[in-house]
Length: 428
Image 1 (cartoon, helix red, strand yellow):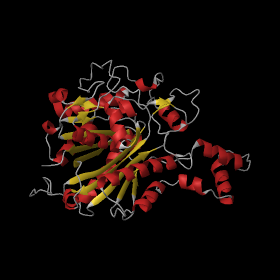
Image 2: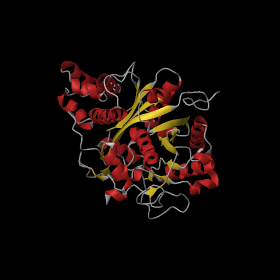
Image 3: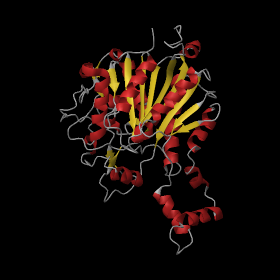
Image 4: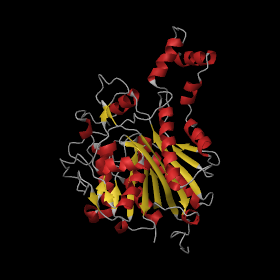
């Protein structure tokens, strides 16, 4: 293939990022988030949204400063997505109808416990076991509840975003566990590469922290139980790590072909250079311990980007702080980068913001691009007891100034959903 100013090594359109927006437990907006992240500030705190007495984990990175009309995960997730999309479009200099497709990563939808209890209180009594669903449906048939109905529709968030921002075509909603945010970006990249559009809106959001979510992850022994102090709980790659800290957040990236972006005079924030994705059939929740699918994912992203291992100057790790996942990711990175890995800075944003689940891949993509734009590597905080079996330069505890032109960002999700993104600075 012939490579030009606007095409890559395979003759495909180069994909530019022209707008970014982010919300995490550190605050709303890229400016505040980046200031806190690079200062080593933690957004992890004691949970106030619901009672936690009797729970093993009582901390989280919830986003509690955004007003929502109803307390459920759909309303929270929509509010986060709306705010980050407004920020991203403003940075991209786009107003009016977006006129491009929307790819949204959103959390799985289930009724909040409070809603279930409310339905149970209104449902007729019954002696028959196992007929709760029929009783609930009878209540809703007799007394329609539009708010509850909206909260049960997986596609409701993307439909509302599409209406608000004037996207084109049927919006796509996806859920690939912790890789979802990166997968949404990959779909946007592919749409532009295939010539179906010159721009795409990629959004990932998660406002699903609830008592039930905590209990379910706790039953998997996945969550940290180091509740006091909360800000010390997430400690990726440390010897005394004991699990991830569940969190909320959202991120939006505006993707455009480089040619279209420059033609309209847009500022290019970075290039979405390569995407890799591999599935893992090892287990419903656990990743393959040998790291085989993760290794293949990283290599696929590098191949897609047309870059060698030596081109990567920084790795934004998945870095969940779970004993098994951190070990697996280290093994995967070692297999790809070999002895050179020890000299590549690697850090985990989750040490400060927690694991934003569905949103993580997009949130960390935003921070990866910001790393190149500012020349600042965010630290991995709480790194005071290194795991001697994981030999990494994790940018421990304090940010570092460094000029980086290519970043790898990993997202390795439950059930073997693996995705990696390679991002580079704007080409000269």
